Length: 384
Image (cartoon, rainbow, N blue to C red; front, top):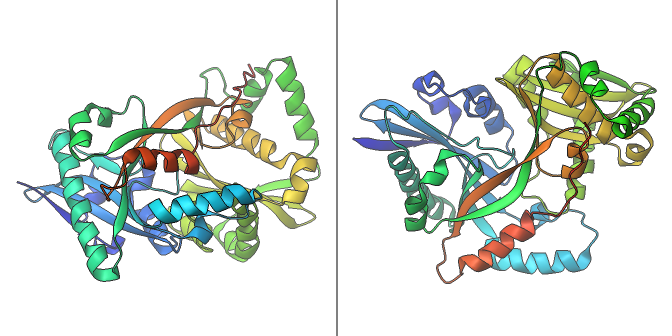
């Protein structure tokens, strides 16, 4: 008999959670504990266990997202875009959403099931039953109606797409979103120097120019105490970049980076860029098996162009991946062109979602998806 149990805290999770054969660090309790301790104010995370009799056979992370206009729209300079967007969001999306997955990171980090003990269709049915129950709980406890339900970030070859009849029955439609930029580390690259020497003439010159611009900058990894001591400055640097995104569905908790370092320890890396002892930029990495996941970053906007900080961060992240022999570096979405210029390749991603109000056609919801996460035209670069 298949049944499910919903947990609202990591402390409630059964021991069997971490004993499943899942290798994704984003589904393990250290990351989930850090997430719970430092979630954005508009995101609440729930943890689903799917059981066959008394055996845990599948898990899922579900996030309740409260869509507030001040969080969604930051300091965008396009006032017309902002006004039109606010009207669209307020009429269609404003309210609560339930997302299967981690809204804060690109990729499928929301589901796992043991295919030897439960088939995918049964597992997805259990997830949907849980979403229905959670929707009622949110309505009763907070007086909020769930407007959007979504399953996020699946590659084109993900087996979840086999279940077309399931998604059709649940009225969940498939939508393409921005690609995930992935840097594949070639077998012949034993050192970062091997990688840089593989550039063609144009991009080797570009690399050398960028590197010259950070000769006055010290880059070093920060330990837990240093992350704690510089917490306020790190968060301000994150805000500098995040607030300029224009459209965003959350804002990180001020203690998020400290919480991650505390829980993940050496599997979470925060590198700071310093000029005369002052931190002017940082980037973060999460070690996830053979994949190196790039996470949030920040920098001083007024120094970005002078030192080509962002481009140099991309080089540094790629170098870390090569030095420690990861198979790939996940650069996530956004800034596709510059990421392709250092060797990352686009991989298409898809989501499934629906509006719970049948009066609102999914065609209208598609406009919201395109607006909030548009598939932009861009020129892919070929540096090798």
